[in-house]
Every structure is written in structure tokens, then in C-alpha cells.
Length: 69
Image (cartoon, rainbow, N blue to C red):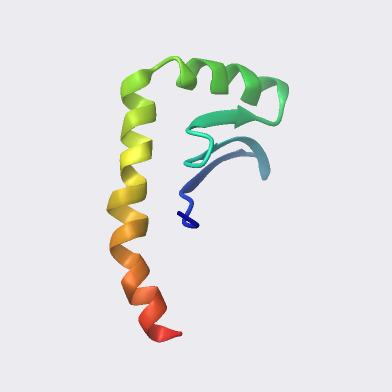
């Protein structure tokens, strides 16, 4: 439960929006990012796919990371 999938979107070296699996939605950090976040949050299949990536990317590799520690 302490594992989090984060996807950040950048434009011109500035983070405009971020998806975190703990919130399950995008959060915008600029005016443009807020508009993009609202758009992406209204696409349920896209949000579901990003939530599924936590299981695909994070949970499958957590054993590998903990073995090296």
C-alpha cells in the first residue's frame, strides 16, 4: 500500500500536470495543466489504464527492488 505510481507531464521544463495512483486522478499545476487535467480526468478508460499501470509496472518490480537492498 506504500507504493505509488506517478506520471508527470512537462512542457518547457515546467511540470504542468501529474497523475498519482493514490489520488487516482490528474492534478494540474499551471493554467494549461488544470485544463488538461480536467480533460484527462473525464476519460474513465484513460484513468483506469493508468491505475492498472501501478500493478503492471510497480508491483511486478517491487520484489526486485527489495532484493537489492
